[in-house]
Amino acid sequence: MSDIRNIVVLTGAGISAESGVPTFRGPDGLWEGQRVEDVATPEAYARNPDLVLDFYDQRRAKLGTVEPNPAHEALGRLDREWSGELLIVTQNVDDLHERGGARRLLHMHGELKSGWCMACGDRFPFSGKMANRPACLSCGEQGKVRPDIVWFGEMPYKMDRIDAALATCDLFVSIGTSGAVYPAAGFVQTARYSGAHTLEMNLDPSEGSIFFHESRMGKAGELVPLWVEGLLG
Ligand code: BV8
Image (cartoon, rainbow, N blue to C red; front, side, top):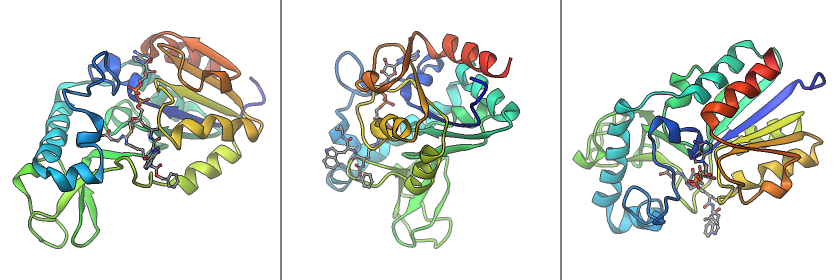
């Protein structure tokens, strides 16, 4: 472990599960009562904007009722104390990493607390209800603000920055993700190709488990603090 300098951490819904934020693939295959294709695609938004806006309004409002868990806080400690390079790439759209102290953080699938104006293209902090068709804070256009979320079929954010970090990392760690969605699910292979050691921490083996040098099965709230202590201790 002594030759580790540059770390990339990928997180998914599993890291927020112990905070009470539902993961995507519940037992009934529904996600907060909806089918993913009915709420997380541009077509769904065009077809039924009220359903989609209300779905995200509800999740945004829920952020005020959940707290970061020990896994988020451990990554916040790693961010403060790690002297090498670190990039935390999250697929999550909640704000628990920030509230847990992470700073070297990137939301590749967007954020619930951000609005995106389809009239002027600006993005800005948003915490209200989009179903009320608010005016854009930048251009004032009414009813053109959509969730700043990367839906299926849309380009994930900051891929160039992610690819550059994967190309130079010595350690790639995946936490709480099923490895079901690309391009995130392919990051482990990119990291391996760059010669990085790869570690997965998950409740169950992900779809990409075979690509990891090491897999630790268990709850993120227990495994991540132990891993960070081992790295920094
Ligand atoms: C793209 C935001 C091109 C939404 C999300 C046809 C047309 C177009 C594209 C495609 C297509 N077919 C396939 C694709 C590609 C598609 C894709 O991969 N589809 C899959 C279904 C096959 N991908 C895309 O469309 C992406 N865009 O391809 O554009 C492109 C690509 C590259 C370069 C240029 C162009 C965009 C995908 C983004 C979709 N948006 N989120 C929102 O949040 O509302 S996806 C969403 O699901 C998440 O963000 C995450 O990425 C994904 C998987 O979720 P997970 O986070 O892994 O959560 P999940 O519930 O699945 O698993 C939880 C895990 O945690 C489990 O393993 C569980 O065991 C574990 N766990 C539970 N509790 C704990 C725990 N672990 C530890 N501790 C615990 N306590």
